[in-house]
Image (cartoon, rainbow, N blue to C red):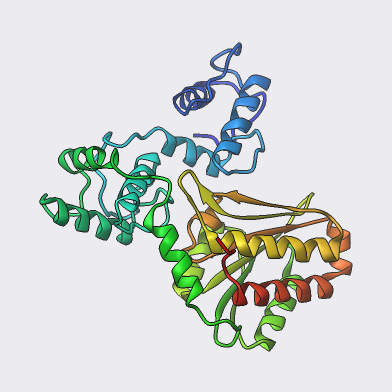
Length: 323
């Protein structure tokens, strides 16, 4: 599959793109099936916004992966732990149903990892089913039957994250923090790392354009929080959120980082829930701070680093908003 697929492209890959968009509920109208038109771009942008991706209107590797995942419905296939881990809307639905019943499958990230397998086995044990950690026909049937009796808007993972953060230490001393940049912000990354270390934190700096590689490194480091930095055309801050789940800690930190960026750069960035890989695949509260314009960021690097360090310190002292 040639990636990216963008305006003007023709061929079977565009036909497949149209088909997958239609399955996801974003059908393209009044356009030739084999041609990427303005209508294709509009539908793709709508899909990207709905899925918490950058609405670029072009089908890059990340968007294609999410489109493929969107084609799975719970019950279409058996779900179980394997390598590489299964991903899809069916996994997210499974995690949401388990979490709503009180079985902590972790974040509703659509990735079938060890935590989801453990929650699956616990549910099976409690339901008197074969305890194999596999979501097959019988297990999914029981989940769907019981799922009609509970509130699916508050999976247990949300409650667990809030409680874990509320009981965490309230200062930077000894906190494990990852600061990662996706390219072009080495000076800001180093300056922010120095400020956080001066406050007593243990800091890992990452200089890597691949978001999944950064997420894996942050998870291996067992970080308490991840702060990502990227240069862009307009300032914005993002945290992890998807249908049925949002990171309370990520949202609180995103709000504080937004205010820090506004203080130094003068822009009024948004703080938005998204599901790009660096936010989706990290297992700790995470934010991605996109800063602009580049020429101002360069001049005010030291100020911005200190402001972001203060935001992280403030978040450590109050990691979730009052309910």
